[in-house]
Length: 66
Image 1: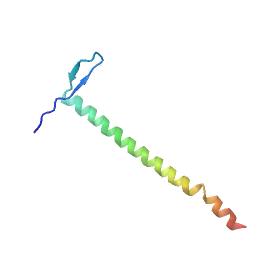
Image 2: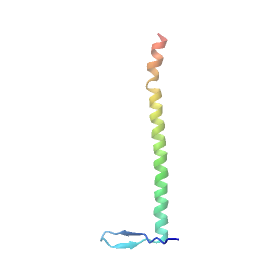
Image 3: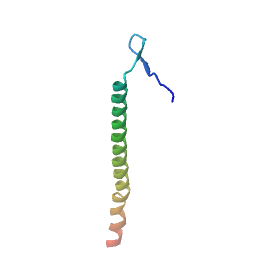
Image 4: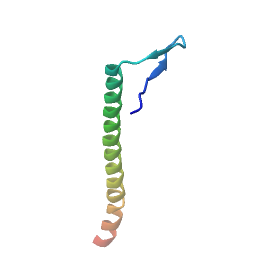
């Protein structure tokens, strides 16, 4: 199994190794953000789909009543 030594550059440009708990915290935050983005994307898609139905609906209904 490969060992991975994660590093990042701090404000001074020096590389620092991240601890396992810090990596886990960052990963969990990233996963949580991705889930929220997917939920928001689904809501936006649903609203957009409703718009394609409700906006033309009065145009189709009004001429048939006359």
